[in-house]
Image (cartoon, rainbow, N blue to C red; front, side, top):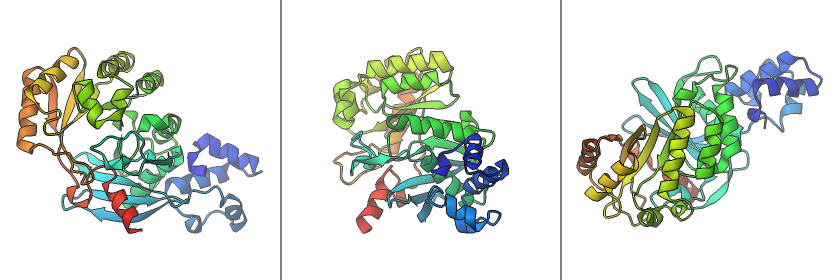
Length: 341
């Protein structure tokens, strides 16, 4: 797919077709403006016919807006598979949360993305395509970027699609792409230790976020099957190696689940785990997934848990809940759409 190509790769593609380099640039600019083939006016029809098979075929199938202003998009690809992407508005600009896989195979019980398993990985161009479509929806183009920040935290485990995710980071941070600073990109993982080490070797300036959600391996395994493969201590050690290599602060997601991970002892253990690491903990009140039998704590309790962490010297905040009325949790809206198809 042509949206997988960098600027230089696109010029080489044009050259192989026997075309001048400027044709490659025209195709590249059209893709980054999220134009359909029919909307491209500066390419001859004969050339559009040639590239039609490889031209990206994705679209916004549906869009929902929350009362808090959060927007959730259902993106459909050429093969009929769908993912969801979320646009959140902050004082500094727009942040978009992108999916990296169609579904997910990690099996985390608090996440709706895993309910239907993993259908397939997204290519780098399909991850990019979500952002390009939303950028256009907000009035942007390849020369008028509206998106300021990216979170790889939608459906799927980014490090389970390692090569395509890394190519996406290269594409989106390129000066000939949308030129989004890597410092404005965050990648969230449930803790694939070997891939965290590989990511560190990339020398990216992105932020690494760990979905931790427990302080004891046996408790983590109750809600996150990946805990049967990697121990918490192994994940923390990988985070220390990542920080030593990149000097980038590590973020931890901690969803509070009643009776599972929300005790004072949990807060104390979490503090000990992160001791000496430049880290920040995002406390998340549970987005209820009706197919799962999990109960979330109140926001008041979440603030108390955060205060307890702070009293032990750990930086912590309670994440603002956004988009609850439009299927706020990862995968919730996609699953609703699939049921109604």
